[in-house]
Image (cartoon, rainbow, N blue to C red; front, side, top):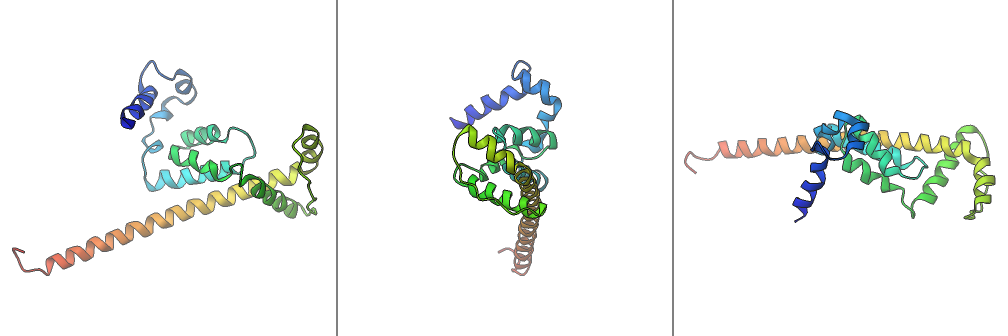
Length: 181
C-alpha cells in the first residue's frame, strides 16, 4: 500500500500534466537522480543544506531546504528532515546561542532578554538584537553545515573501507580452503 501511494505522489513530478508550478520553477532540475538516491555526494550535501537551513530564522524552513536541495542537486528527504534540528523545543536555546555568538563576534555584551510573546516585544527587543542574532545564525549554520558535510564524508569513507577489508578477508579465507568445499 505505501509503495503505491509513493509511486502516485512521485509520478506527478514526471507526468506531463502534473505539478506545473514546480516544473515551471525548477524545470529539468527535478529529474536529477541525486534528489532521491543515497550516495556520498547527495547525502553529504543534503546534510549540509538541512543543517544550514535549520539555523535560518525564517518560517517555512522545509520548503526553503527543498528548494536549495533541488537547485544544488542533493538528497531531498535528508535535507528536509534535518531542518527539524531546530524544532519548538530546541529553537530557543539554539537561537540564544546564535545571538550570544553573534554578540561575541561583534564585541557586544549580550543583553538579558525576558521573552514575551507579543508584537510589542518583537518590535522593541528583536529590533535591538537583530544584527548579532543574524550573524550568529549565519555563523552557526555555516559551521554546522561544514562539520556535517565532513562527518558524512568521513563516516562514508570509513564504512566503504571496512566493507572492502571484510570482503578481502572473506576472499583470502575462501582461497585457503581446499578445492571443492
